[in-house]
Amino acid sequence: MTDDDRIPMTREGYDKLKAELERLRGVEMLEITKRVATAREMGDLSENAEYHAAREDQGMLQARVNDLSDRLSRAVIIDPSKMPKDTVAFGSKVRVMDLDVDEEETYEIVGPGQENPDKGRILSTSPIGQGLLGKKKGETVSIPVPRGTIRFKVLEISAAAI
Image 1 (tube, rainbow, N blue to C red):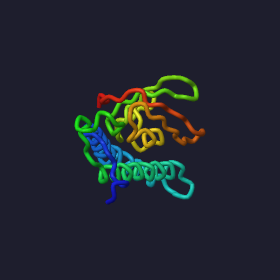
Image 2 (image 1 turned 90 degrees about the horizontal axis):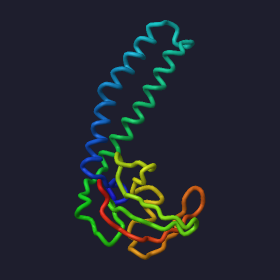
Image 3 (image 1 turned 30 degrees about the horizontal axis):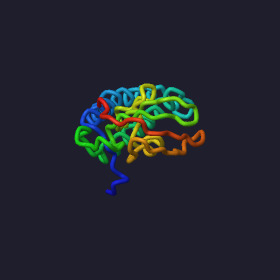
Image 4 (image 1 turned 90 degrees about the vertical axis):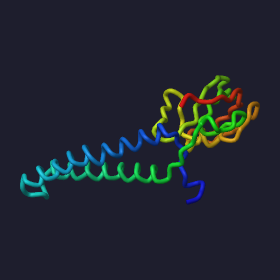
């Protein structure tokens, strides 16, 4: 496994994803299997909308289980308190100036299971997270995002509360 394949996360984020995976594999998968079986008993499968809906839901649930299993298998538990304090890294809280709109924004660089873009908690693997990693106070960075390019000046780096 290369470093690019690894997914940094805190112990809390890892445990949260693992609990979700166990719930999906247990409770959710049992419920959907019962729905498929019940729908199958209703007769002709070619015109059985309940059966097809249950099978589609089962496929989507299995895809989510596969995704979580993959992410957990590539997880690397990081202790944010041991990360550098003068450089943006996993577990950093970064205050930046958006140079295009002249507004300050604050981001916490987090791992899967802890992201919440509405509260400024972004994944280290997101475009903005990737663009900020390794930067120091005072540096300016241009980050390509789906809507164009954003330019940030790093104002302050501290430890995120994760």
